[in-house]
Amino acid sequence: MEQVSCPHCRFTKEMPAGAIPDGARVTCPSCGGKFVFARGGERPAEPAPGAAAPAVVPPAADAQSAPRRPALPRSLRFTFTGSAKEYFGIWIVNTLLKIVTLGAYSAWAKVRKRRYFYGNTLLDGSPFDYLADPKALFRGWLIGVLAFLLYTAGTRYAPSVSSFLGFLFFFTVPWLVVRSRLFNCRNSSYRNLRFGFREEYREAYVVYAGLAFLLPFTLGLIFPYLIFRQKKFLVEQSSYGRTPFTFTATGKDYYFLFLKAAGWLALLIIVVLPAAFSMVSTLAEGGALLADADLGRTQMMVAALMALTLPLLYFFVVVYVQTALANLTWNSTRIAGSSFVSRLRVRDMAWLYLSNAVAIIASLGLMIPWASVRLARYRFETLSVEGIADMEAFRAGFQGDVGAAGEEIGDIFGIDVAL
Image (cartoon, rainbow, N blue to C red; front, top):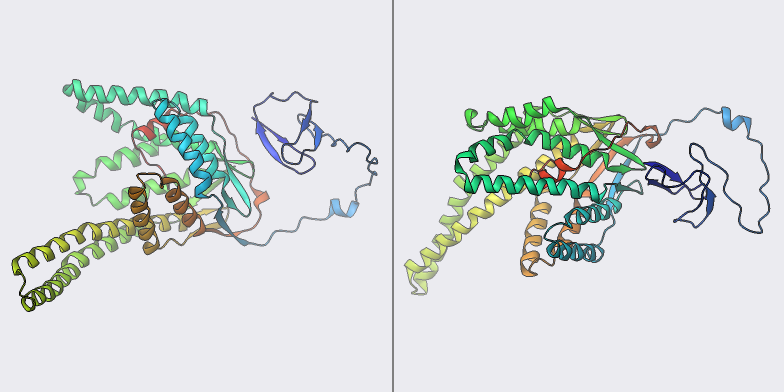
């Protein structure tokens, strides 16, 4: 890939290497200005017809020799400018074409969706960009579908080999995680600078296979440490250009988070729920006696109401854990002395999940684009970068081609490697 930059408006676009011959006349798709493309250098833009030749102004010696002033640290906020109406058009076409093609269009659907969400996510007024080639994703999708069919057929028609296939898949997960992150980071850019991910397979196997293998032997007590190591691995292997991200959280932070969630769950089940049951049943039985109603039926209705509250309490605890994990992970992420700040609130996330679920069920799925845009807007509006000084200080690193097999196999088997 090579960058083509307009000398009139500075619009820049990445094109396949050699797609534009050296010396070719190019029309900028942004401002309509014309210029001569020069590989390895910049030629002057063509003047408009009838315009006077520009005067040659000698460079000012003071401006060239003056030292560049260091930029002051500032706070940059993320914004999301997408709308449910725009995304609905993309989503409905993607859904229909995936049905008609029996899933083969999923690679192009993924690229269209991610380009829309990346392009509408702004930091300091500049959008992100998703650069993946749908054809590369389609090749990865074919490999993923073949692996899924072999796994499904093997576990169904040859039970004797199902354990072997499960064992094999378990030890493939670390490789899938690395390849998926590698592909997505190298195909994500901001201000024409791509993200990166180091191919650290040894640590991936320690974190995603070794620690996961110890879960049953530790009765699950190692689970908070496992989550901590996974987040730390994903953050510290990532980079923006040549600048790596760092992670400052500790295992104690994650144990404290899960202990707090367990404390809330115990308080709700042991104290709040029995107290609420006692109060509601007393009031209901008193009302039934006064109204001369069926006391047994009233007690059954109260018991059923209390039983329905258990899944609701579990839902709020799960939302609390997910929200606290997101805040802890982002707030512990640093890059070049700058830090991310996430301000997600549990009550807001719970309301978004509940109202989105009701809207999607009531609309038979047609409100999925509205729910997706709504959730993305809230997440980005509560995220910012603090103390960043100079965006121009970041430099590009080496970027080679990466196959999409890991990304597509991970998607098909439901492996989540997001922060």
